[in-house]
Length: 230
Length: 202
Image (cartoon, rainbow over all chains, first blue to last red; front, top):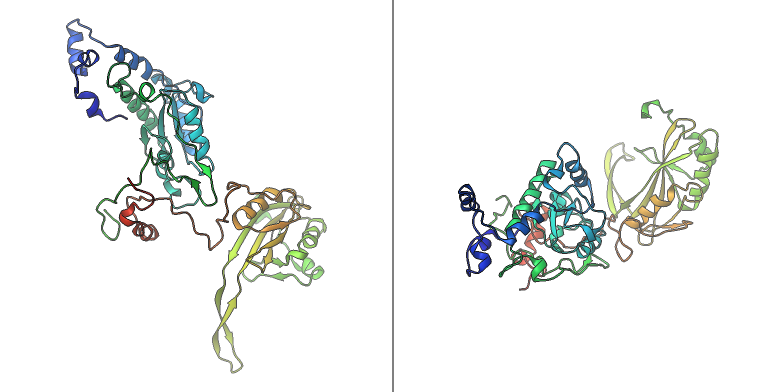
């Protein structure tokens, strides 16, 4: 999600900033019978309570995602029960499973088709980094090479509790976004509809192998002894 | 159907009808030339002693040129190790069962001697189930199946140039970062200058 330090520090005191209280102060004031709020807060509260995921699964992680929508784990408690069959109606893309290179252009295209504000959860080791297939020739080494990812869920596959936790993390992030006032950090209101180039198939690999606007290979490896064990 | 319930298959009748067939040591697989495979398989399917009506599995094997060592007894009665040059080759492996007679398993291998331009005979005229499996073998090994009606790539995209299951396939260098590299991956990571050579120019 967005860097929390950015949203809590006050760069310039505008009208919308002046009511951007931290939760503790807000709670104290509510006890005293004073309710202070902003349109942003109300807006984000409503938005975060109805994050509709896209009905889209790639591999075994999708089974866990489906499970978290079932009655035992019940993602409906968080307002995300409506898995939309069309990207045009969805807010959240859960990349649940192995993204093969043959599938990667379609995933990027689905992301492009979603309307703003849109969020991406990379679910499981494969969607994050290629997972156990990292040394293979046919699996994308992380969907964050082509589209921006908001929340990563490690696991192989992550349990439904982890899916719920990622949704709660995303909701926290949504509540921190600034939408209407100055200094908005909500891409939907700053950049318009974000669309990323769809990679094409070439003779050896996808072209380009990653989108440099979204992802860059790290400059150098963390300090690592010769045997590779940190 | 557990394997133990199946009747072991006697290969003598098919070897009698096709004297050029060989039986591979160790695996017991029938080895045939691509030119003969349709006749052999038709015999295995239709002959009442076999009735192998189910083609279970098709796959390929790629062998690079190797030197095989074998122990032999020479003329003086001593065992010596003989080096035998094995030329490169490819095999297409078929597994047959009989559903009606509960027989199996018979393994058949098409041996392709020309590894650079591998050509095999498709079993699609006899077993429709060979269609997709032979397409997969074509996709991964690049074996050209003569007589296949729809030989296209199955898993990789059409623009893909290589055949990934071949022994000399070099995969794209597409992971620049590995937090805990070891073994082959560590060697690969060392080739990236500061680990970021894979296109990192800011």
